[in-house]
Image (cartoon, rainbow, N blue to C red; front, side, top):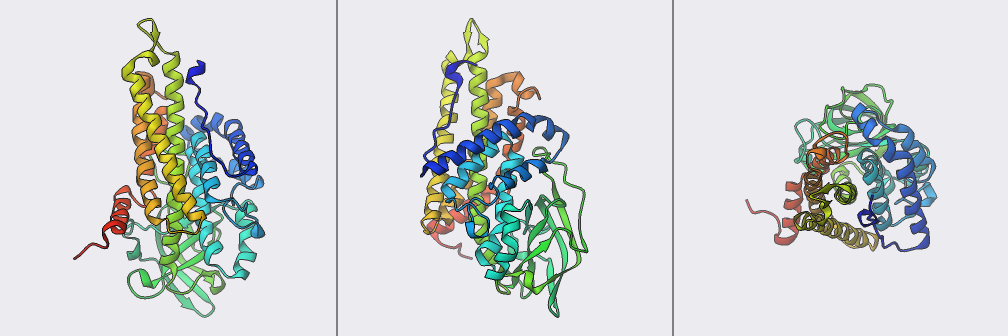
Length: 390
């Protein structure tokens, strides 16, 4: 590869510790994750051993309190770690983001006793989490969920089906939103359900166009019994907990999207520098140079947008609008950049011999998960113009 094809992301990190952290993650990503990504994705293999390594390295609880096994890292740093992981393999980057999302309820709304009991294992004890909000008939309209939790003495009995669950069937714990009261958002409560709970089963994983190594499955709750000690927050507070988690989770998706886009740009740059046509590298042709320039500009803009939202979060300021903007822009960018990367490689880009076709397939799901990009536009518009009139 020509020197001019090399592109190293220059990161603005707040401390020397954070710079060393990102360097460590980049080393793990390049040594342990990227070399196996294409083969394992094609075979549909989930890299559980990679998540064990990340847990042992303290990388599954970065944005949480060190008192419970977390890393005390600001979101500004955590998201750049996600970007590095997603650039190596989206199954890993997105998986870490989903795990962090699953930890949010206990970390943010659990009692001191719940945090002391559960968080050390969740954040650094090798466990893997999943987040259960969506249902077969309740996706974008999450407040209409139908999974029920009925009080029975000191326990709750959960019945229903959750859908599109990342890590469904392999997670060690699930943060589950279920209806305990009236219709709508005010009747929803959050629960922490063990992965081996009696009555909990997973369907065969969905057959997806991308991220084949990450299992996505329906979960069936057939009278799953959990103690009231596993109820997170107050009764009826679950939807507020879910929305709070999703604001942060959208930033995770944004960072993963930029990681995928960056990986595609790097491949395109390397190919353009080495591919000879008409006696010179195709990187010398203006039409292609302009395409590469646009790809790089979109990536830099997306990275700046998600980092600005992260800094607002770290400062304790409202960031919901910026999170929606970051998720929208970064995932649309990932789709555009990966499509353009395939175009740069021409026929080779359409083959399995190069990773850009996989990156393009993976980019698509990022426009859908954790609130479709149409939902993000609705969120942004409400912040700008107020609620819709009816």
